[in-house]
Image (cartoon, rainbow, N blue to C red; front, side, top):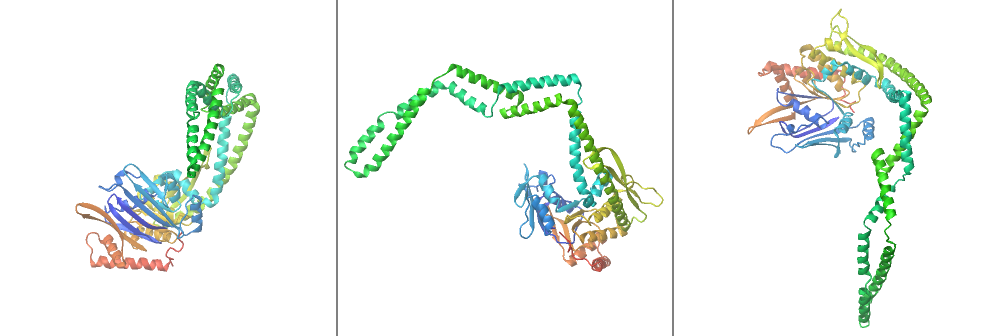
Length: 564
């Protein structure tokens, strides 16, 4: 679960720190108090694009830190598979520092890319924003929802289909490469033979270019090498060391303490003698061969010419040679290979079709179960005469996800036929439909933390009460963090946080704090009564809170005992 949130110097927030808990965590506040900034800060930490404009005016950087506590062993194994290791208490720290020039995301103090950050945190938290329900207008999302619900029955098939589809696509591409006329194939074969002969006749050896370069450099600088070595020979071959040794030997007759220096001079004389002989031998062998120099230059030009045509290195040229031999073999055995490829493609397509049909059957079975549960949930959300189903259409081509196209269908009035969801539902209805879907998915979803950002937009009254019941139901299996403006939902809170905005010394600052029970009741009264809070409104708020608590106890809530 999301245990701790810390935000510093982000938008209107100077410094905000809050500790969440299991169950239903509710956030409320006046319009414009900065509720969206709180959720925005979480999104930023999870890998959303962070603009430098988010940095609080006058500050050099902004910082967001999330601390998750992961207690479920399965979830820990999934994280370890991504090379993320919670500490002994199961803590995982996710942070984002936003600077004018760049942003840096970290997990457990290790820098990570935004893509890796999203992949890892996607195992821990899911944010449902107030506009996410609009994704229901796109039927491509419907198949994703179906597969998400039925992954226990479809995930294995989808993985196998994805592998088979890749093999099928590769064979199809290979078959297309055969579609050339006979004259063109003959011309290509002749050109392949020419290129193969050109490379093979060069008889290239790995590392040969470096050897040629070194030899060419020696030949090109033979005069300089000779002059330099001659000077070195003169320096080490003189009698200076011999004279020094003779002088020290004479002095050592009178002072035995000089014996160490004398011995060192003996060693130096022997070493310089060896060096002198080595230099002399090198100079004797140092002869300039005009023909060898010319041959080395020609060989180097040949190597570089082949590299310009076939690759940057000799290894690249030799690899190109093998590819051209393989292509020539294909051209010379065209009919046989074409027949083999067609046969393999037919087999691959048959297997892909079999698996796709098996997946389609599984999806239809799952769809019947899913839509029945969603329809039941919609009735509980005040869709009294709703009919909800899923329509399947078969694609005319294969994909990595099978051959299905699926779309949710709905009728909200008696006697009306079901129609595509995107053509029927209004914004407020889409919000409730998404909540019904989330409630059903919560039964199989193992993401520990769900955040709902004002999904109650456009609803009120009895429907709001039903939405609150749904959120409480989800909170029995997940940690739920919900931003709301409805008292019916706020009353269900296990923990209630207030987001408020204050102006001090000409600067606006957003704060967040947990409310005590009496403060939570007062906040409910504000939500109920607006600008003027009367005794009757306060009484109503107390009754609403007591009723919500009674509902929770009556259903035997375990305080989030099933949380991950």
